[in-house]
Each structure stands twice: as C-alpha cells, then as structure tokens.
Length: 67
Image (cartoon, rainbow, N blue to C red; front, side):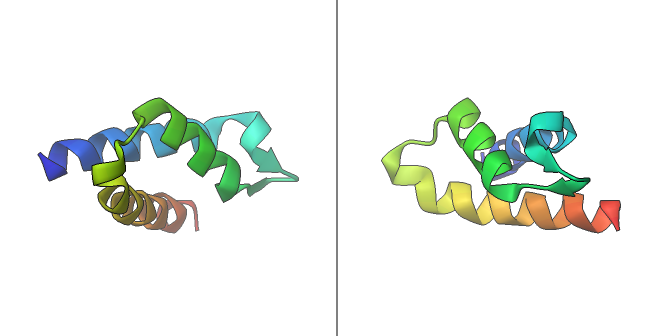
C-alpha cells in the first residue's frame, strides 16, 4: 500500500510542479505544491505522518531530476 500511495503522491507532485501558479520567476514554490498535493490526496489524520514522509521523498526525486 505504501508504494501505491507514494506513486500517487509523486504523480501529484509532478503535476503541481508543472503548474505556472506554483512557480515564481522559474523557481518552484514548494509550499504551493504541498498545498495542492495535500488537497488532492486528502490524507487522513492517521496517515499524515506517512504522507509527509512520502511527499518529502517525492519532492527530493523531482527536484533532483530538475537539477
């Protein structure tokens, strides 16, 4: 289940990063990305810690690909 949840989060991160409204002068506003992904995945209170762990991992992967 964790792998499936990670894939969903990573996909949502990639989509959010691509949105112009989440970019400021070519830089990603990660707070906006977080807000978008959180609202789209709607993690329950019981899985919020897992959500943030997986979200950070997905952001690291996406950011490394952009470098």
